Image 1 (spheres, rainbow, N blue to C red):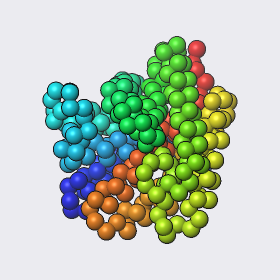
Image 2 (cartoon, helix red, strand yellow):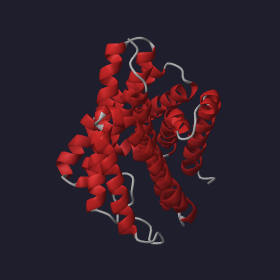
Image 3 (cartoon, rainbow, N blue to C red):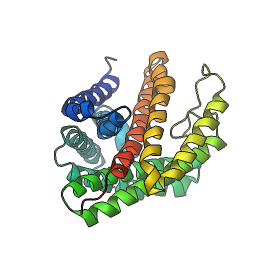
Image 4 (spheres, rainbow, N blue to C red):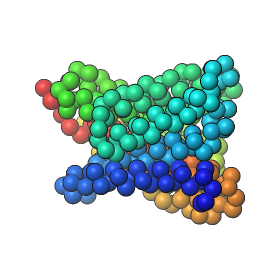
Length: 291
């Protein structure tokens, strides 16, 4: 863990979570049972964002190479986005100017999807690149839902309403698609079904894949229904955090080289970010708009 590109993402992500828990301690004490996870949604989201922010400073050349070659100042952009991610995480955990940072984060992810992910998907025409595009689009949608919650608190009801609705619908759509893909590719690790296969030491990986994919599919379908979205999003968040604990954290411990450790680290925080996203939808679906 002394290697910078291993140490700093963990340090940044865990520190953000600790700060967020301290700031939210009163709400956590007042929340009952699984409601505590709704409180922690922005904190988990911020922890993952902070972890990925660190990679912009420790794996800068890899980040730079992911930026389209036609864009000028790719090294500057890699650092700039890292700063923006840290700023977003700090805003979320300290609860300062969240309406602004959440809107800007959503806009940034939309730009990523339009400028990088969709062109890559159109060029390669494989399910992985389209899955990555939808994943990042859903991250932005989760932030948009949170922006709606914060704007609702400020009395901007009309602006809040469409953000909360659009964020919920996009995350619901992503959950349905991920569920279908997981069922079609049951041996791939659950959460966001990308290249990685479920570790061989997990028994009945196909059963796990089909089972989790079914959960995602059903939860996503019910998230389209405003009155059901909060409950199913909350339980999907729980299921995703179980996947982190059972599948991905053990990969961090058992990794035998730095490449495998970086991959495991990314899968941990990526799945935490998915969990945080659906918990933001639960947060947005919980309250009534203030009129």
